[in-house]
Amino acid sequence: MIQKQAATKDEIQTPWNVVVHNDPVNLMSYVTMVFQRVFGYPRERAEKHMLEVHHNGRSILWSGLRERAELYVQQLHGYLLLATIEKTT
Amino acid sequence: MEICRQDQALEIRELDPFLAELLRQVPESARPKDSAAAEERLFSAPAAAEERDLCAEWKVYVVPELRRLFQSATETVQQDLEQLRCTDKPFANCTLRIPLAHTDAWLNALNQARLAIAASYQFSDHELCDHYRSPLGNRRDLSLFQVNFYGFLQEFILREMEGNS
Image (cartoon, rainbow over all chains, first blue to last red; front, top):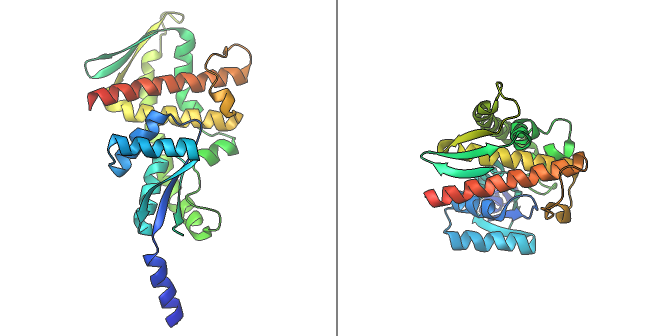
């Protein structure tokens, strides 16, 4: 029982990444706009992430609590971006 | 075809019957219909497959909300497209006015359509970059043209929104 509680606490405290994956259809300008809107990033930072997605196939947009990360992914899916959450390693 | 900002709307003027027809097809093209690939792309997984609980909950709680959001966007676009019912002169060029308040819905619906078409036809990166292919070859070429034409409209809307902010 104690073990289970510890695992749950660990799970809650483990940060999660919000990852956006490359997709050849979404326009670069559209992706930049979405990053600005969803995360409130200034244009330069949004563009940096967009280019990272474009060149490296993925970019970590945000890290933090799982619930918030899920909310971000839901918003990104609302804009039709390919986004997932993953535990930080 | 000419696109410009007119007061609180974007105006697409001198829209020939062919391009008008492509625009009429936006709501229909945005529906995945029988294409599993399109359905999978529009409603992609929120995490790797090992996160089974999250992926299962997502399908139950989030996907229906996304469906409603996408449906609402295509309905707004459908309303605007009523202007293209050129019943008196079916082969005349027409004008489409997109109110600025509807630009988000248009961006979303155009994106749905582009992604659904591209997923259904499994266009390669190379094909998607080929902006000069004639739409007249076959259905696949026409669909590729459709994806690029919708992308062109998205670019224009984005530029106008940026200029407006």
